[in-house]
Image (cartoon, rainbow, N blue to C red; front, side, top):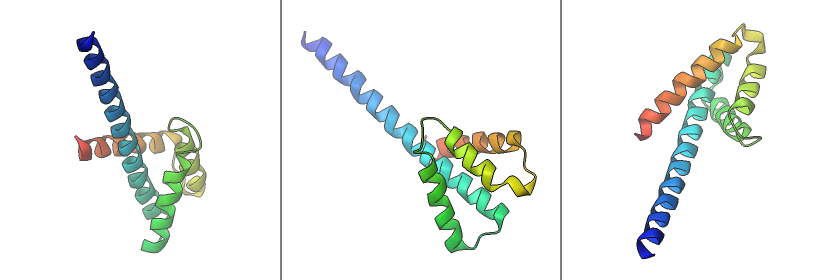
Length: 102
């Protein structure tokens, strides 16, 4: 029974590690998204830091990426950027964030 318990603990550790990694990747992606939007909006460095924090916090509203997407879409509504462009950029920045950790 000991080998079964060891195996179970191993799976639990891997799951916890994978979840932590995914959280870090999402947070990094949100940072990059915040930087991207800040550049479009022409924010100064202080305002950019504040905006990045607001994007990161927006991700805690619900599971998944839709909360961040809605925030960014609303903030960019006057800049003629399509939903597809936003989603494509979020995907691109997610891949960049993954490469930071892997």
